[in-house]
Amino acid sequence: MSTRLSRRTMLRGVGVSMALPWLECMAPAARAATRCASASAAGAVCGAAPVRLAFVFMPNGVNYDAWLPRGASASGAAGGVGGAGEWALSPTLEPLAPVRGRVNLVTGLTLQRARANGDGPGDHARSSASFLTGQQARKTAGNDIKNGVSIDQVAAAEVGRATRLPSLELGCEHGPSSGNCDSGYSCAYSSNISWRDEATPMAKIVDPSAAFERLFGDATQAAAAQERLARRQSILDFVLDQSRALRSSLGAADTRKLDQYESSVREVERRIERARAEAAPPALPDMPAPQGVPEKISEHMDLMFDLLALAFRTDSTRVATLMLAVDGSNRAFPEIGVRDGHHHLSHHQGNAEMIEKIRRIDRFHVERFARFVAALERMPEGEGSVLDNCLIMFGGGISDGNKHNHEDLPILLAGGGGGGGGGGVATVPGGRLIRTARETPLCNLYLAMLARAGCPRERFGDSTGEVDLG
Image (tube, rainbow, N blue to C red):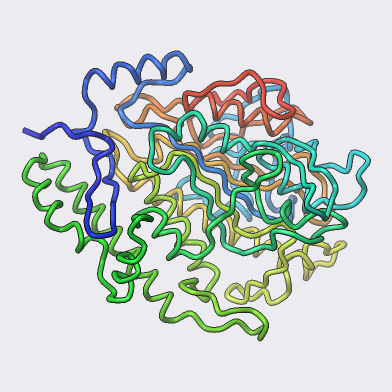
């Protein structure tokens, strides 16, 4: 018989504390009843596992003609929902084929506050600044920045108290925190999507080794953690004795989950150490050599996605953001044959060769996301998967990169939104084209996501109501 464990049980060693994955023996009847009542009040199907929210940002817009499914309009009747067989994957979205049934395409959404609204040029800065806040950023390149609280931090204030990390902010490209980055807008706007308050962006972690330490290192024992890294010892070695003792009190199913979890942690740590050893100095001599960041962009993105998956699997956090790059990024993608800068290519002005390269970059981003969704689906949780208990929004604040428009945004929504962990029906069915009326605020989607996470609100940003997620 499996022993009941607290959900906050940690494996501890010298300078290390490591959260466990969700196990069946962590759901006492009294707490489960309380959680069911709360979930039911929010309109969600009760399950044994918590709902996690993540927001993944891609910069510079897309080539919308290749993004939108053939035969589909960008918008429809208010709240209209396309059925499972009503749309074909577009060339850009083809990598979603293996997980199509777990992903919805949402069209018609608008980021009104990313428009100029009298402030002139600066669409890239406004795109990232407004993406999760729904607010108009004050146009300034000085220290008097002003934006708004982002939706991830609203969620973290509600559900973050139940986890060791209220929220997790990740990125795949550094960006300046001050100075002029876009037509008189502070670099703080272009470099961040998560905002604690109207003047304080949440710094993102770009180095995978730093993210790993954030998740699994004990900050009060920094010296011991550094000694562990120097000796290239695994975090699991520190907690091996406690892990063995725990195994004796687990059932067969939980023991298998613990085995799978430990293997995944070891693999991520090995990859981080390999990246640290292989990282080469950048071409520009005035830039410091990255520490622990893989040379290939795909490996870096995949590793950050893997760390995000581990964070959700261990319930280290239930709210996360990931910026694939800062808005306005001019990164090249040599591994897919694109050596021109992304931002430069987005201003293609109809040039066929440049458009083709943009389409390759867009598809590359979708490939990375599809891999992440598949990984969450393979992670068992209760009678379902971790993906069943997630809502992952993927997209950007610019629609077509050449037009710099902020309506008909490229938005994907993955995950069941709760219900799968307890064997129930997921509250958000997948595989659909969800058409919203033209000019529907993006913040309407955020209200729907908050409700599925058990922290409903009447308004956020410029919202006018919830998107109907079915």
